[in-house]
Length: 592
Ligand code: ARG
Image 1 (cartoon, rainbow, N blue to C red):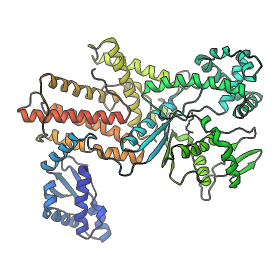
Image 2 (image 1 turned 60 degrees about the vertical axis):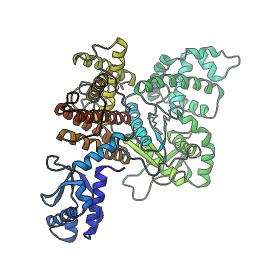
Image 3 (image 1 turned 45 degrees about the vertical axis):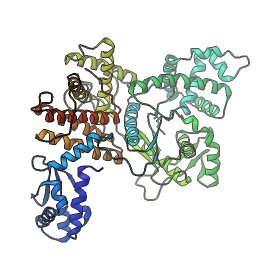
Image 4 (image 1 turned 90 degrees about the vertical axis):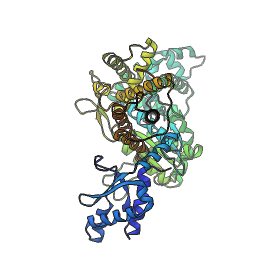
């Protein structure tokens, strides 16, 4: 099954070819002027330029050939030249009705599957031990989750990996801070004989939350402290038993808290691997890198030079082993690639991480290519911009700190409750159902506000706007979905069922054309790793449905066949809207 754009492109392309023109110029797109045409082909302009001819003349030849072709005349109700040489195409009702029939019975609602599925790892989320997640992790989680779902939907085998930050300098800092806090924890770290492990139970989340920022601040000012933390990091990585005992507790406590956060967001990982899981691969990797002549000594550290001739700016080398002997952020990333090769052997690894880490990934990817761990193109950084405050700088709390993800979700939930009440919604729901709906509205607001932008663009955090039930927002989409659900419930109550689609009204035409555009939106989102194409589609679909619903009575349609057709269209629009929202990781409530 191909979408209308694909079918039309094929037909027009073969006409171009028949006229001795480049077939690829026959590509058809959705019309810029829906009042004049459904689709348009701009190829005559390029063809004319190449042949130094008049584009309107070529367009006229294309139209003549299309009109003479019996298959093509079935597809179109009108074909016209417009402007400088555009070919405007209006679809026949027959072709549109046939496509509608395909979409309504398709479990994928018109979206094609990839011909050659691939194995893909998406590295996203990237939370850190003992550091509460902040808005940067929010973007990574939201975008990464959506890309994972889109790839899986298209037929790939996909693993989402949280790549938990559990092996770097912050671990050394925590070990020191825990020891300073409580002598019993220090004794555990130092591996004292007959040590009392019960103190570990006191090492809970509130304590970690307090210790880490304290230690991080101290390390900024106190070089001696910093050096000790570095040494502790190296000792932990070298396997010091007491440090490992503390570390295991840090990891355990953090994971429980993070999992709760991710669950609230509807973000789910297939692999909960951490940087530490790459540790076993490091010794052999280092030996091999050295043998390949890639690892060289530089001021006591071991580095891989990754700069290339022709680079506009010199890319610093990848630091593999620090002068204290510890593995670094880039080391664990490189070794993680080795591990993934062994375990999943993916065709592609996508890293959904803040654009500001672009240099880090360039270093890691180049080192991986040099070492032969991944062919060119198998590693890709899916960068994104920042969520900003009204001042245009990365969002900060009123006190000037980073906003914790937990607090952000809480804020959104509060606002969602208020918005629902304001709009007079949810009044009939039980307290529990109201809370569930408010949660879904809050998450939809945050996710849609993020995903409707191309991921590379930064956007301004504006909870008032995000949670509005009007405009291009998550709550608006949920509201539309709930409206259809309630319509379908009423229909079911009166025993009405759907039937074959009949297209009469312009709003029905438009709705079917919009349903058909789902395939292109999915393909585009997939190719560009950009969920905003799906977000845009969901919004257009909700709008097309809303217009249809205003113009075309459903339950009181003029005859039974029209009513049955409109019920089918409504149900299909709902299914596709929910499918698109699901690809964005957004759940719709049953009622509001
Ligand atoms: N933990 C890192 C951070 O908070 C992000 C990890 C991203 N993934 C990776 N493979 N480096 O900045």
